[in-house]
Image (cartoon, rainbow over all chains, first blue to last red; front, side):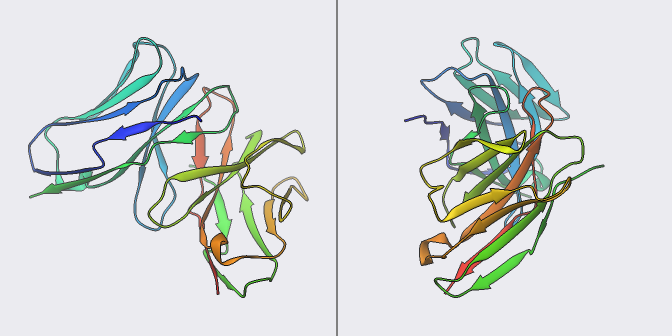
Length: 111
Length: 113
C-alpha cells in the first residue's frame, strides 16, 4: 500500500509564528506536489519538487524535497491569518501517473 | 490564466440513478484524471486517461464507473447506478506532463439520497 503520512494533522498558531508541516513515505517519489484546499473547493497547486534535496520558495513558504525523495516539508515564516487553510502533499511515482495524497494539515493562524 | 472547469457544481440524485459529471480540462494538457474526496477523508485517485484510453484505474473504479472524452474539450465521468457511498466531492484534474503538475477543477459535490 502506498502511503503518504502528513503531520501534524491540526496546527493552531498565533500570527507571526513559524511552522513546519511534514510529509513522509517509505516509497521514493518521482515528484511531490503541495496543494492548498479551501472548504468546498478543489486543491490549488502551490509548488512541485522533483529533484532530491531541492528547495523552492514562494514568498514566506519554503518547500523542501528530501535527498532520497521520500519526504518533504513545508515551512511558513511569520504566518498570517491569510495562511489559514488545509495544506495537502501529494506524490507520484511516474510522470503522468496518479497522485497519492496525504491526509492534510489543517492550519489555523489567529490574529 | 487557463483553468479546469467542472459542471455541475452540485448534483443531487436518487440511489440507482445514473449521473454524468463533466469537466473541461486545460486546453493543451494531455493527461486527465478523476479523483474523489469523501467528506473528512483523503483525496483518492479514481482513474487517469491518456491518448483516448484509460491508463490507470483504482479498485474504486469498478464497472459502475466509466470515462469518456466525447470531443476535443470535454472529459466526463459516468456513474451508472449510484449508491449512497458514492456521495463525495469529485475532482477532475489535468496535466501537461511538465514535472507532473496536476491542476484541479473546483469539484462537483455529488449527493446520493
